[in-house]
Figure 1 (tube, rainbow, N blue to C red):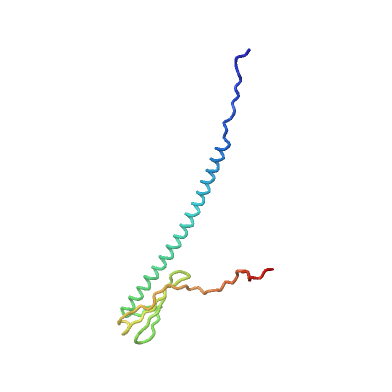
Figure 2 (tube, rainbow, N blue to C red):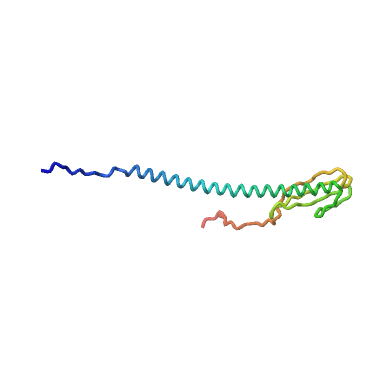
Length: 142
């Protein structure tokens, strides 16, 4: 008789725990991809915002320089002067391809007189076009 017994070794039960681990890894991967796409979108938005702000302040600086030249009695190029007393000056500075800074100033007593800023506003430059391409329900059933 052989005193040796055959011992059968069965694999450990891994079904439920393995599924939980796989599900957890998948969830973490999806959350990581969502976080990455959010970061990219935020980066694009912040770059667009930085371009818009720097464009505005560049136009503001140019408009301030033109106003200073007007106050010194000069008549800079691109500035429209009209009226006599009060004298009005209008000009615009480009912010971007779709916006400009419009300025209107009143001078009481000529260019050396009292200066009052009447308008300092960024406005869109593109033409507005109506978009009625939406196919809306008119309330009638078929």
